[in-house]
Image (cartoon, rainbow, N blue to C red; front, top):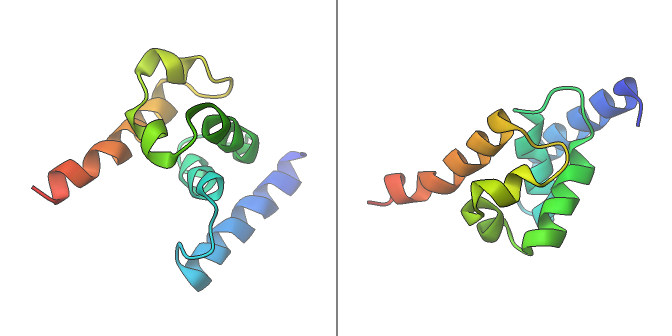
Length: 95
């Protein structure tokens, strides 16, 4: 996917969220949207699909060990920290 196509796709997925909320999103699309905020100029759809294929659920992605996440091509320290932070939020919010 070219950088221009990628940017258009990012805008479309954000617009889908603004218009409909999270309803109707597949788990990989939720991850894809999240990853757009911490991975600039890369195809986050393929990374998100790989994460769901490997870990099966969003919850499992957020609970995955750092070393297993580092094994995913396209993820780095910032994106892994972001995913782990998102995974920790419910335990803070719902204390």
